[in-house]
Length: 368
Image (cartoon, rainbow, N blue to C red; front, side):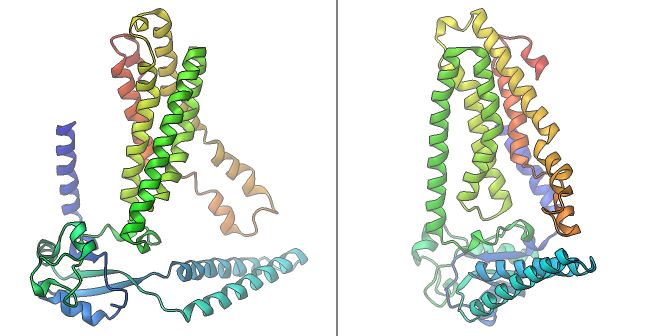
């Protein structure tokens, strides 16, 4: 495991260095002053570390931003409906969409009058070495930035008071922009809540596995298969609840939670609840095989059938009262969403389960 982590990090670094993106030249300030919205002020501060090319300031205005995006979608829908031609149903739909656009416009005008504090500041340098120099000079532990513990040189403090939390940002297309508006304290609160809920679900699964194991191996395998297909959706919701800052962080957190849950439910929990003098019995061997067949085949078959996606494409996309425009039909035909973390943990679970029981069930590696 240690060797694989080392080689994975090495390969990741080589891949990152081979492709130059905005991330390689930029830094992000996670805790700017709320009223620090002057680009020239940030330009002057960061110019001491290199040639600054761009200053990008984001505000805590997700409500306004979401409404603008909603208006774009409604305008596009209105234009598509107008190309349909005449018809009473089409006219009524156009009037409904126009009224929605008017309501959204009024809300946007009202929200534009409000002030929005600074949320993040992204600074892009001309050369990569300047970004590295800036990070080496300004990177501090989170607690120092949070509490503004002034152990830095005077010229490194922003406005002579703020110890900035400066790091290398994620790739621009992976940032979850609504989540970056949360403060560090709120992010930690949501993270603790998410982890507590995840732990509670694992405890519930422990007792469910013990109940099913006491009934029959078939019920145990069915219980594990059901949990295996439901838990990805549950843990995806809990991961989103923790408000990760980027898609990479979201997938990493989801992968850890899912791998731990699948490892415990399919292998560790049933083994823990088996008495030592029952491990070599034919009943336990039958239980192992049934659990492994369930783990190795049910989830892949469910993914292959893609029931939800098939229903969207062949039923919902053909209902005239459900879709109004070609754009909505295209959205239903884009394919089902899937998670890289879910697929990785599914493969890891099969491999671990097979290796764990290979001495008791020689067929396990063949099944895997």
